[in-house]
Amino acid sequence: MPINTTVSTTDHELSWQETALCAQAGPEFFFPAPGASTREAKKLCGACEGRVACLEYALANDERFGVWGGLSEKERLRLRRTQG
Ligand code: SF4
View 1: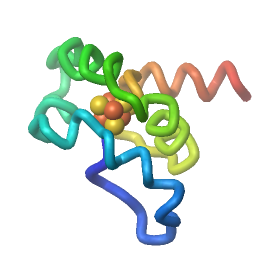
View 2: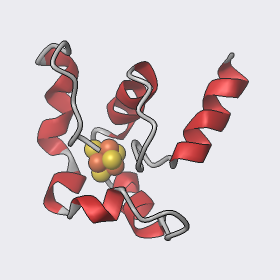
View 3: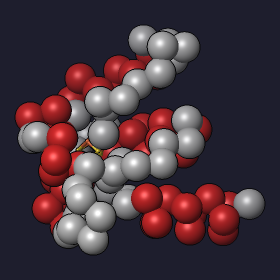
């Protein structure tokens, strides 16, 4: 979800945002209220060209909130734990 970007990141690292499908959807879609469904956001991620780069960015920058690269906060946390 390319809304909260850090200033220190280079343009190259953010090039995937140019094809980000979520840029056309509202932020409420990708930052749902606690307990709300993330299914629709994940569906969009599944069709997004930048999905892998988006997920890598979120993991590298420790993004805590919202759906990034098709994974919810909990799923990213689980992934980080299994990756060590
Ligand atoms: S993978 Fe999902 S969250 Fe990431 S840029 Fe694409 S649509 Fe947005």
